[in-house]
Length: 605
Image (tube, rainbow, N blue to C red; front, side, top):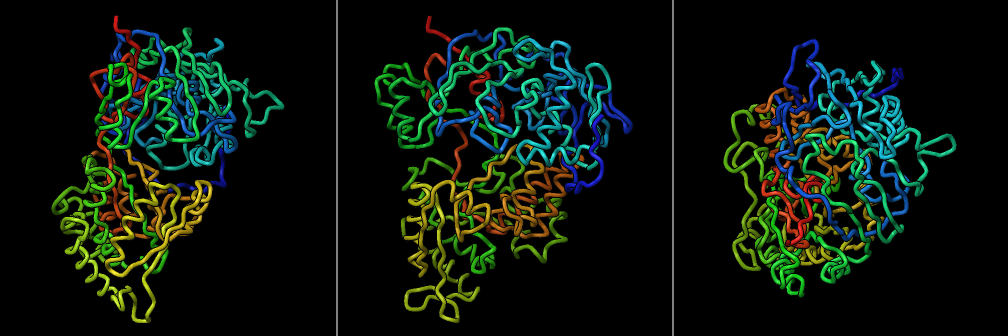
């Protein structure tokens, strides 16, 4: 038994209620799965995931183009750059996730999972047949070593989980129990998704925290094949994979080889696809998607274009206004800057109007604030914080629509009225305060596409007397500047899931106003936002959680922290016609667990 006694700072409280279908106060029965709420969608006798084709043939390969390179194999330490495929294809966790449910896990390495109503512990019983690719059985010792090592020597995010573990104990030949010292109802699922490593891979003398190119031995469906650092890597399907016949895996892992080719230029990635060096390409450029597939393989049908719809939240992408800066402290100023952003004109210029605008942080889902007035449940959550919210937070709110054309005159007049109410007026063609100081700021950006957007926005701002500057930095500098919140305005994209949880504190928590390294890039410092995140994390039923998420969405949107861009409600995948996918698309769409997991290779004959 290893104990994690004392000295820990208890992390803030609990996430969503997690049902196993069992359920007394003392202890539920061991189960095959666990969900955020209620019971899993698939019963104990399920035969396959609904979005997997159990009759899919085996064979063929997928060849990706990847940006960058790799110089190490461990994705779980700070040092080195590891291929994404090691985490995705070589290692496994105790449980696997269904991407047709918001957050449900089914037993994978484990045979059963057991917990209580409070989620104060979790116990797993391992499958007797679970084994690493070299045939060695996965043991409880491997599990305990993995958690302790990742928690104390892995990337910092693993420490947050390990600090909430009071003790981990072997309770039987194939069972292990985790006791928690913190109320956190999501923790049971997080534990279930932690990777299990082979302890023998790190004999005495090999430092876990040092990066190297020792080929890893995992328990997953693929093994590392040929590779050349920085150029390519193959993952070959293991025909002796221990879990190939599990219902969770039936119809998955069909391709014999998954290959990643590495590039340092985005244009070269597309050119390699047109030349047949790779056979799948995720496109993000509307004009190219509609007009650029005129090369021979696309014309003759060897390459096809597939549109994969999804039901994920839009997330938030846009110009981030750093409210730590005094000029952005007034919400009226932030609303004026949103009004001055002529979305309709810019979307037409950049995207030919093919993308819808992001309406809120959780738009495209039931967690979004929606149109019109808030529900009674949302009002009840937000009303105690009315004094700290914007005056219209409990009223119908939507992003402004431009008046048409490049001039945006109606919204520009409204923006100037708000600036005047906040103490800024146009003097000799420049927006200034009473002291004669100009309203100006700097865009800190890292890509030419971002610079182009800022240029279009700057042209519109000039019409109301604002003349910002732009600084283009490399990616490393951008990361450092973001970590220190050293910018006036930058761009960022927050991805949201259908099971938002502890990460919301990292995104919006008031601790992040001063604590470096969070993702609270806007400097959100709102009692209402903190409280809504807490309400989400402590909700015990779906209705309460939904209301809390909608209230959080409303507090963030009416707070005007970001000038929103657009999103794509579908993925655009161009691929070899012999690469096939099921008709049934999971709610997450083209996401983790879709390509290559449930695709297969099918020759014309």
